[in-house]
Length: 298
Image (cartoon, rainbow, N blue to C red; front, side, top):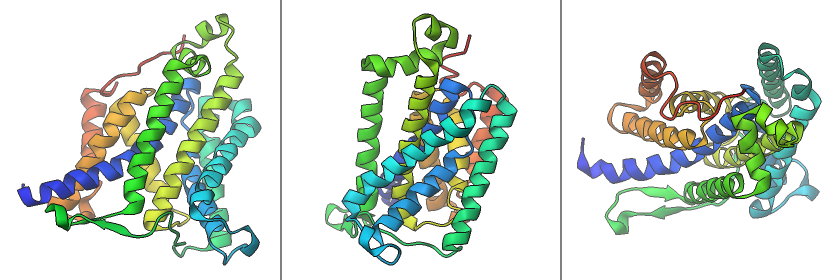
């Protein structure tokens, strides 16, 4: 390893991994509570980027243009409501059949992609939450960090901290924890399973929306932008332990740093290779992941 590149690897890995964690937490929360592998989660990430892009660009609807810092929470709220609507309108009625639910969310994701292609085409839709970058040369590090990456890191950890507090320290949040541990036990303690699942989809949609805004601000929005984040979410959730929020955070950083190591020292074209190799090793030798399935349905 070239020691001079270590600071860049550490910083870039931290920036990327924070957003990866948001994506994976939403994915694993839905599975933990309802046992649903929500493949539409990726489409919601894409929706977050496009909704934010529409709100900040006057080329689409001039009278609706909002400042980026106002458009950000509005876009997140819209995607959260889209996720809730997906649950209430579709998933709620079929969630007992795992295969049908899986296929239905795939179909929703494909429909979302086709709609994005129809309305926006394949070209990249550029947008910016916060322009500019921070030059770290004066600190002896030969790199720049874009402000959007820095804010993404901070916002991600603030959101993760608030979510952790909500789930572990409030009665409303603990109902989600109870449903994850045991549906039967949750029902016996008067927990409304439908309300819990609806809240979980709402929260997961909000997390997807946040991730979508930052990914779109960093690289622009395209109809296929959701494929790589969804694949990463699956890898992270399996490695961290399906249903484990803590495992998703740890695995997100593991994968994020592994990717940055690959890009820095092997080549960008091999970016995802080591992550897939690691996933294969976990499937073969540690299928329960780093933290295992924290809770099981009874």
